[in-house]
Length: 490
Image (cartoon, helix red, strand yellow):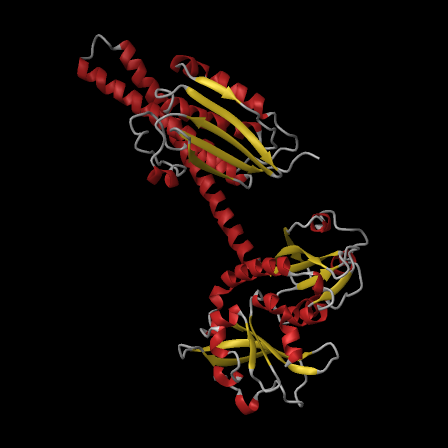
């Protein structure tokens, strides 16, 4: 029992393992029961600790249990059986079973990990929880991990995801069984040679960030099994004080394929919108021109009612033309690629302010500019973003307060810009929809507009890995933020 209690010094680590996991002593009494086991079975730890593992009513189990059957080689991997939950619901599980040994190699108990395969459709959600738990696992590891690495290896071997550990000199010091089955055993080799067949260190190797205590996420497509993975690299403190790297692979192949199909659908929708908007715009120009011509040339021949009808035709035609132009802009956003050179954002904003100078001067607006970091977002799109945001402030806010503030900031790869006004603001219940195409808030309905401008802003932000949102300005008004993923210059 003392040996089992010693092994339980890793109890906090075991609690974070995303599979159901429990330990039994030589009498098959449960001595450790993790959170995932509680979740799958409904049994809390205090309800099963000290009891025989047959409390789960497994099939096959009892006399046919293979854990302490010397005739069955260990470990036993991927056995399928069923158990009953606390609610008497029978579920199908896939489990791995192995002996639990002390430092002298003597058997002191058994370890069983299992996953519920009854509800495979929830696999992606479980994987997300799994990744989160792994990050917590890494944070909880201490200097004792190096001495107890063999026991930790037993735990990692029960996982179905790939996992490996490398030392600071890129040498592979551990691979779990799932990874060895696909890659073969490359323990002792450099990771770049063993996994990717390269004599050189990977160009974007995360080891420098790991040495600084950071966690790094990346995506890689593995040719060896034609699958795409999100890889989470986290620091692992060794017993001698050095930092190792623990890497865990989460299969995101299906998610990436769904994203590809969604992107393809969006491109088709953009192409349709562009074609329809372009075709509808063509006849609008002569309609507006004819209405204007009739008002000028036949002013003396038409009565007041006729002139009003022509004026309405012209106004509605111009409104429709503006809508077509905005729809064309919205469709074109997705066709523009990121530039290689940084764009002078301050110069872009200066040009926008010059184009809007008539409205700025006419409304008496007071513009305050703060730092505007350069970006690799194309100048045409930056101009459209600032034109829409500043134009909205001029249209809806300066009649209440003439102040408009424009600025930006950089935080690593995240680049953010804002346009702040001190107008009437936007009702809280309207903010979630304010960036939707054609949506216009209650304050905007009395003003001219198409309802496309903010949709262009959000689409531009998303195109470059960012987002757009609105915050309430302290004291009243609205602050519009636009964020881009923009790698800083070398």
